[in-house]
Amino acid sequence: MADLLWKISITSYTLSVLMFILTIGFWFWFRIPFIIGELSGRNAQKSIEAIKRNNELKAKKQTKKKKHEGIKAAVEPVAENKNSLAACPEKPVMFGGAETEVLEEENVTAPLLEEDSEAPAYAGKGVQLEMIEEIIVVDTGETI
Image (cartoon, rainbow, N blue to C red; front, side, top):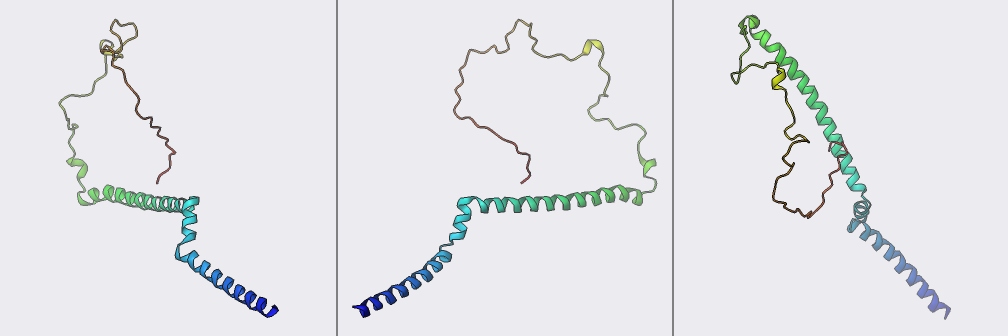
């Protein structure tokens, strides 16, 4: 009887070790760490941080590039044409055919609808509006 229990215990221990190895294999086969990261939100947080870093790097590169382009654009016309100031017209070029002028007292701007006016703010036929869906937009000020 003791011999039979010894064989059963050895078989059980062997099967438990095999099942443990199979469990470790399935752990990586079914990508359980990735699924845990998705369910906890850790993967999304990492990807958002990576996007932020990329955007910051791109912004730094663009500002450096714009600074260099701005300096280049400011220096090139002078280098190409030393008499560039003489080529400028004396009068500014006008677009639209009218100059800007100061408003006089009679042309002062005023609100279109005044509170004491006789016309109501809405002179429609009394259309009733029904809210179908409420959308709330929250601006966190983050650049993604």
